[in-house]
Image (cartoon, rainbow, N blue to C red; front, side, top):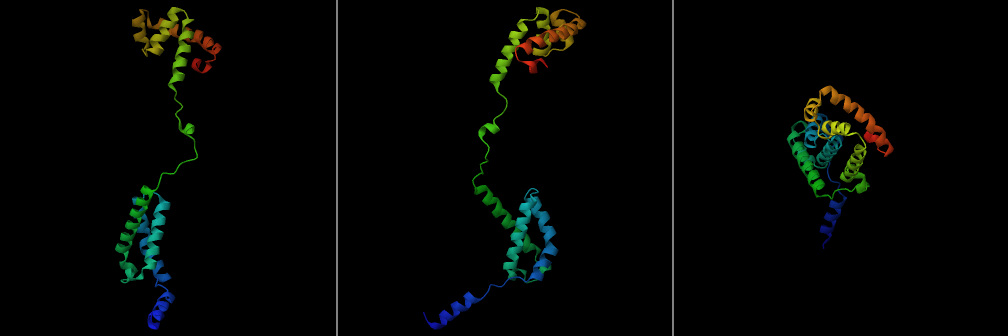
Length: 190
């Protein structure tokens, strides 16, 4: 390697890369920052933090590339929007490629509280408790609460007046409550 090539390499290494001056960068932000942020909020589905990060990265690239702003800050909006759009696309690609984060929660924390086995046991306990009721009380409870019939429909099925169905329901529930409580099913009795 000759001396002139070495001198040129040293000169290039010693040169600082040109950047945008602070006043021009401030003017870029003043003129275009709110518009860019509003557009980025739409792109990021309202994620203000992500939108501000992309805006900051866009202005950083403008600072590093003063040649792109050669026509002046007032004419640089199209370039800034293009850069911001590309940065946003890169962010979404990175996010899609990144492995999903695993929470510290155990699977039991996310398990549903619904357990069909508990329902089977509760139904069996209620069946045993209802067997202790008088048949006319049990029949009214089955028609109204198990089959979901209205008072009028239950009256037709049972062949009794609606007032009798109402009365039997009241006394059946009243008789069933202490039986369920004795079996430890106070919640079902309420």
